[in-house]
Image 1 (tube, one colour):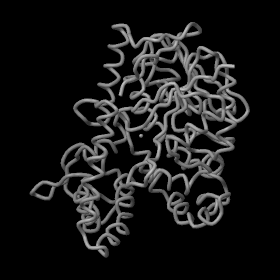
Image 2 (image 1 turned 180 degrees about the horizontal axis):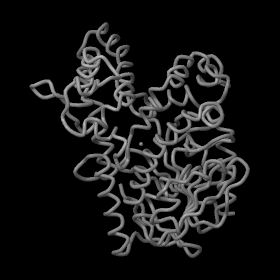
Image 3 (image 1 turned 60 degrees about the horizontal axis):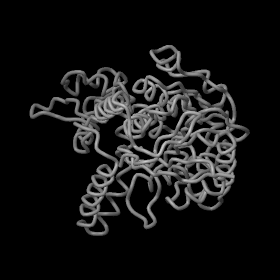
Length: 413
């Protein structure tokens, strides 16, 4: 995500996926041994952060996701219609229980097996907390042994504050009071295209709200975006070819989590994080004073006005879905103006399928309805936006995260 107020924002490329840094575009798919090692190390780190043995190819991720969706659909359809209704309605307790676990620091305190009395301490009633944690065990958020002692599992681990890519921020973001208020007011967004759920609930659009009204909301949002941007950047680092790319600009790059992850694995790259001045003023430690700091530049600006020129590759990670068609036309037109005949842009989104299905992207579209002016789009709708801005789709790559990377080039002439 990115905005006029506060911005930032889930198959390997074949021949022709390389571009020459300020030189001729290459038409082969060869990479150097060093780059192959860099891509391998990025895939290894991504697997570690996701808690899986290996990072699958993008097409395999899509197949596995489809299999999970089929099993879920089978489970749901096996119940009578009234049961399906109740299960859908009671799904809201997953959100609240995850929120309570984080609020009570349960993941951090499960550094070793603990009883409910130890976990409750002075902050909760052991009897009442036990009810919550038993629900969490049933939903797979943590584990319990035969003696009734609670233990961390994979889900608990990624909610720890010291996890290398903690998803705690997502829980704080999506279980907050203001998030629930925004969801409750989606009726306003359904009635009026010009208003989001959060605007109806708070009187402010999303980016104004998190930037000026509720700093705690902004902190949770940036933490959530950090975890998502890191895995998407590792997916790009391990899948795309980077041999002849030397300079990268992350448009709407927030606090720099994506470029920090990318530069860790491709030592020949330098990068700029482009976002509003008050956002890039708070670059991630890894980007600001870590090992890659000397290769990262912060550029303050507004992508509705202008995008800086002179880079080999531009990244837009989950930016386009935040905005309506007119706003996206301005962003993409500015992107085309910034690009040279030898640069490219990689837009990462998770397109909707043409036919409705139970999917992450469908849920994300509801998130956009509650919070933003934008929406999720189908593959064809994204391509229409790109074409309208004078950009051609040179490649589409399925990432191991489940997202799609559209590689765009400026239309000749």
